[in-house]
Length: 205
Image (cartoon, rainbow, N blue to C red; front, side):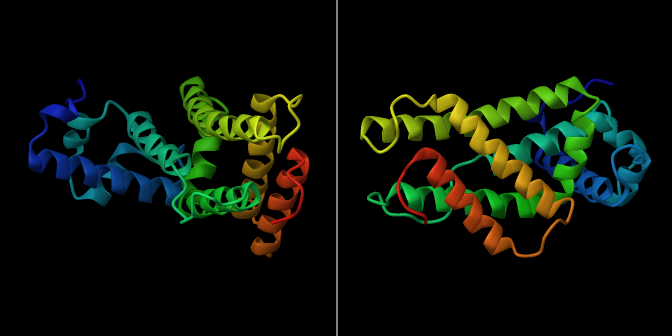
């Protein structure tokens, strides 16, 4: 059955769809993606089995919706307040802590999404697309600092942004998903320092 367009949903339909999405996230987090069945989701949502297929073609489809929301949350604009005249070191610190807060909110689902991405090309592409959004913003900041003479003009801004993002992302994955280490603040301070030093910004946040 074809998925119903979200633009055509009634208010009740929107609520039902959101209830299914929330139920799916809860079940995925508890059971994992591979062991989850559509009936588990509908039972958790208190909906009829057939209702699921009014809104989604498969459990992969509802996971795509959840993943897209999570990636948007994690790669969205920094939510921590910072003045317009803040130094680059402070901006690095804010960006890393904002990303940490978003990763913490979504750590259990991120573990599932990363697993699915190992065997599903669509999820790999979604991951790449959202990562490109975040690294593109970082690359623009690096180019701005280069124009201001704060970062070596010979540094490839795009490659540097991707490398630093990979360092932060994998470090938080190991901490929040794999449970390695227990001093989060020390980890974040270290990531800040490594980023600042790698860019040659002069000083540790």
